[in-house]
Length: 532
Image (cartoon, rainbow, N blue to C red; front, top):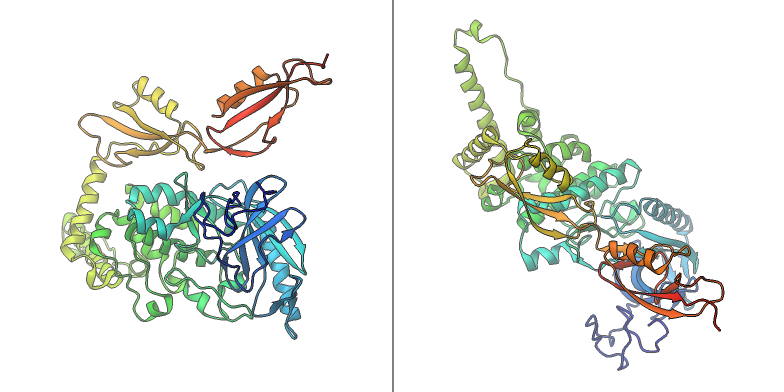
């Protein structure tokens, strides 16, 4: 495919008509490259071919690329800060006069950031860095190409997510961001554009850049995503870090369940309300609303400080929600003086009623400030919290997500639980181990239904499988291994002087270690022994 003279500049499929519409991806190959970009067909590091420029920000350009050695598409990220550098006719990047120190500093940070991301490629919800090299007086990072669409496009086409859907999709992202930040890697650009939806139905964190491209006050043109950038990114001397990613993550989560982003952070300094329509809020558990409110506090000193804390608030069990489920404004309210009720001359149950009333009023005040005119009325909020309390008291459904289906089936069989488990579907999931439960209905904490049946979705594992090493295996052994991993096996034969009869010589059209889709047809070339 890479050697074909006519190629699509977007997906590198063969073209029959020069500069025609690609029959595979639909790209119009008449479109020229952006003026700042490398020419179509430029080859980097001897085997990476440049296609169309897919995106550009103050740090550089991302191209569609093709690895001519491994015969697969990649994304190529070029460090090219246009505000402090210029491209020469030969494609090289040179810093502008007087900007040499900034260029060298930011180039070094780009390489270091790319190396750090490459070290955590086992995190499946993060796009992986496959290669890093320097050429043309700049640096390039080769990212794995993963077919996907932006979260914004997905929500616009498919509609907003339920909380159960969002919870299943965003919790792996939250975990990955917590790991990233613990290693000193801050994204600072999470948005409905940089969080993408893959064909397997999972979220993917993309578009990594150095900090200087994601805040004001540097010599690089900043890229701040409206509605999801935190206030400190608009302030030249403010410190950005994990707390910044917490804000952006919460903003993207709000968008996923409502289709609406918060107003820009500078606007929220004047009016902190999110103005989420009531219909969307009704579908969220109250403790989730409170957790999101804490994470979206405009000022850092009021905001949830870590992903670990945010996880605890979004996953809070009913018995511990009383401390966690209050927005920061409630957390900072003066504590009611708690002298013994007997000293005040009132029975204990009266004090309990007063305490509950004060709490509900506080929640109403905060919700009113946060939601604005389109938020719930006091009666609506009261109904939600009453419903939450009644569900918590009658909860009987255990949490089965991310746990082994077979283990739960054994528990039911042994009489530990009095319900039936029904598998609705097996589906691919990069973040959930094969045979483990992706989602359940009813949800954890809901009352057990009258038919005592819990329906679950079970993981088939990743849709992408890696071809194992041959290591002198026989056709029987290797085909069994491949079929157990979801591949379809075919056989071809040829003589070979050094490989025993019946052993595999090689993969036809593929190589050991190739990552291929579940169900791919694999042809094994098998030895018939020495040629007579």
